[in-house]
Image 1 (tube, helix red, strand yellow):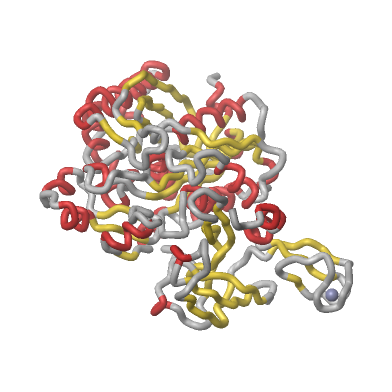
Image 2 (cartoon, chains in turn brown, purple):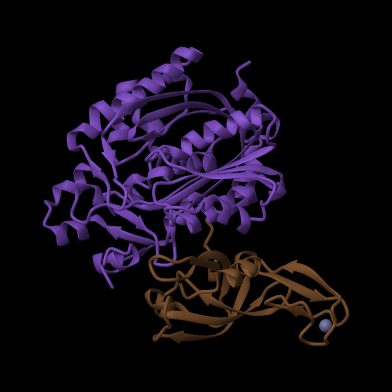
Length: 137
Length: 351
Ligand SMILES: [Zn+2]
């Protein structure tokens, strides 16, 4: 096994629910969450969740992935801006073809498999973003 | 008063993956007759993407059920996950979903297996747990990325989808469980041994002694218990291993085709095993009107069937638009070929 199980477990809420922390001194959001504000050094933080729709800002396509990620190629890494909180996060896009990607498109969070530690190790799950499902009414 | 009558569905949700494999692709690759998929009354089957599995699909169905229920996830006291395609052989799927939806840690959570019927057994368990007052709400999920031996007749229909229901007290419900009845026997119609990647089935044995006998016995048992008859129901939803069996069992029980078609999804998405009948129920709830009565009869090989009488309340109307409907997922589709399907479903052997 190559992955740190302890790390995956420790980070599960930021992977599963986009848990973050807001700094009560400078009001900035730290994602992934940290114990000290990366912007002002304050320890005065509150837990929040960023589970919300987002707009696509920019992206990059990875055709040569590292071990554990190969089967998921091409991997689309994206920076998205969350619609309500305006926080920008790094994520992956899913359920989309490369020729369908458009800057500014509206996306929604979904839980997906991210990688596997061989056929015997743990499966890592995390939030990715996909185009918002079209609704009939 | 029967214990079921105190309980009902407070939220429902479904999920169908984006990809569809036209069954003519299976004809092309394996040399079947073009008549074979026609005999199954199925055109395409839903295929989960490479980054999807029973956990991720079950998560989305459950998220939709939570949106409709509008309850605090922490009030859920049991998460029951029915599947026969667990991502891990040992390690519960239910805990991943419970953690991801913010239900943990004050809850029961487990995965159940009974071929295509585990989620229906979960539904009966949740009714018991809620009716007894042991839990306030139960979350029932049926989710499968059904496997089939490539080139086997089962491959035409084995598909991927999920459905989820939050069960609570009847006073909050969009649909009340009026009665339920279960019929099980030891019938070897379909199985998969440990370490073997694909299930086997008893060919013709899967029909009369398995599917038809168990569903008909469960439904007749429900009729006997309640005094209800086919005319009392507005919809009839049966386990749907293909597009023809549900119509045939309906006819044998005295239900017209028109009551079956609204909840019959296999012609468009294939047989999603634990989600098969339940996604039919989700679609019917998406469009049902207060006062209507639904017959639900899932089936699982091995074998067993449950029959439920479910009565829709006026609360259904306010919750139908609170989450995507089954039709929204049906309309979102991308056609793929056999090669991409083989990659997505991990059929290609790599080392
Ligand atoms: Zn700060």
